[in-house]
Image 1: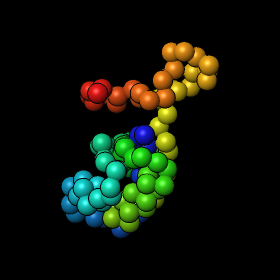
Image 2: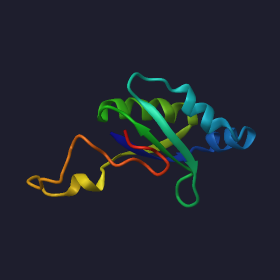
Image 3: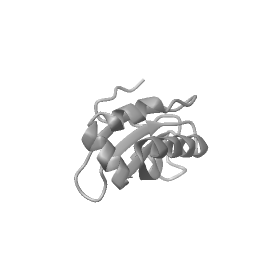
Length: 110
């Protein structure tokens, strides 16, 4: 399951990123947890500084990864499960498949 992480840097995190623009990528790569993989991190404009996308087996694993990442990046993170649109169809819909999820842009399906 994919999760979206909305990141706001603390003043210390901003200073660290200004000193080393690769700091967010290094923080992302330094968090290693079984079953969790980072799919990307993006700088954004607006109320958040970065958006990260991870793949994790469940909410608990996503929360653990998010906490570890927040500590390394020195920021506050809002973590949200990303639900594929196809999962919003009615439970009796024969076209609905909980086993498959839609690939992210630029990602190939298996």
